[in-house]
Image (cartoon, rainbow, N blue to C red):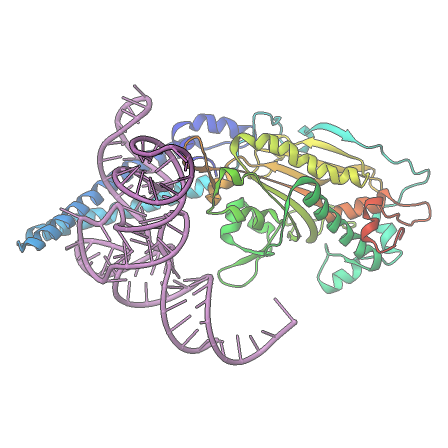
Length: 423
RNA sequence: GGAGAGAUGGCCGAGCGGUUGAAGGCGCUCCCCUGCUAAGGGAGUAUGGGGUCAACACUCCAUCGAGGGUUCGAAUCCCUCUCUCUCCGCCA
């Protein structure tokens, strides 16, 4: 959520920021609502003030034993106007809040213009594209024929867009997960956390998935509703909800492994082959809570932490700075890491590292005590995949394949593979 | 699932219909005192929002788990919900 003050005082500046995302803000509607709100709030508070004053007088008069019928009559006359004004104000505030909650974050100045991924900017590349000396196969060919990856069983158990892994392949995924958790904990100073995989609506509102993106979520039937998490970002970032951190506690850095569940509504027919786009996948997530002045630097650092995993696995990748139109709802600036997939002969997203400024923090009431002012102020939140484990597995399979169709185990995973060096 | 007890500011904890945004304590900030340290004395110390204002500031409203209700007036009374704790049952 953006600062309500912007909506009141700098609507045109805000609208200009949103234009970068290709969104037109209905300024007239906001101005009209705001004018009505202001008038109504002033009126309501005047009635309330009068009521409070009369009630106080009644108390004093009664204590003295005076007759209060006159005062009671005045109060009765007031009641109707007050109730009407309060109802109207509640309706106006709800409408304003609903509208404001559905407005996405403003892009940072460093974010390029553009409507979709074609306008993203490549920042850097790392690694050499592999030259196999044979026609590389994709992970479906490599895994299914050797009964390491099984999509058909997954359909039997659940539906399309799920996968079953067997034996050393299941272990390889676990090895990747373990390696990522260990690496971020030991090398980058993150604290590992374990969190619920179901969250309530408040949590999803806090990180910005609700109200706009409900159709992408799996919702359970309990009341009040719980949702399967689409990313660990949701539970982990919500650890800061309603919290006030002391300056010395920041930055808070969490690393967390969870499964992620996405309905992938609206992506019918997209990436249907293989395990690139699934309803359920494993991910190791990085989350940071930082003081506002550090957030841009923290974003660069967090991105480099995700890159370090790709480098350790010797997987070629490139870093893309997303244009305004391609960023997520809550993000102010996002780098995507795209890994090279020999089977597709292209780069595919394997991590998305975003800096939200105070957008999520405002929704979460996540604050820190600024030593300069002594006051609680909104902190900044960041998150990034470090990495999407399912896609990393896929990348390892395709980049480490041999002419015989086997898969070598990357060196850094050997300690986790119990002697398996090739599968 | 059954029975009971709770939820108050950064923390602990009083208050159970009226100048209570909330006693007292702890913590924190500033000042005084003090060879040092310890102890002591004084003052201050919630959050969100509105209005006036260049600003300092002033003022108003809301908030005692959440939402309703009763009342001129609710932290206090009533209802619903959520969560926590204790005991019993069940259970990985």
